[in-house]
Length: 146
Image (cartoon, rainbow, N blue to C red; front, top):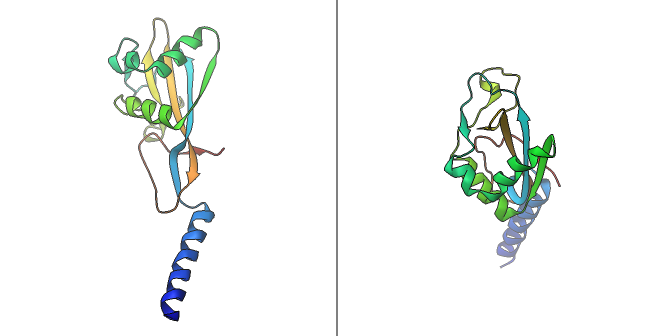
């Protein structure tokens, strides 16, 4: 009986240590941020979708970011967990440009062609410490801490 109890306590303590260590991160669990900014051109090896693309049109958050470029040079939209999941799901259907693959100088992100310029959308997750869960996805090479 005593060895079973010690084994249980040891297992629980190991779980508590892993949970508090911060070594395992769940991206987007606490939401994230969509940053949208305007550029004159797209990177050489990037693909841009048109503003009329069904994915762009179906996401109110993406539309808001692009529309707010009229008033601001850089638009930052804080996202709840549900909004982050929705925007992430939508953006994952669009081509992603990773500048590290061709040593580009323009930022990694999703590119949307506008009338006279291009919008670059960068989605960053807030990371939460969650034991036993790790997520690595294209386009999520870093996390913001709250």
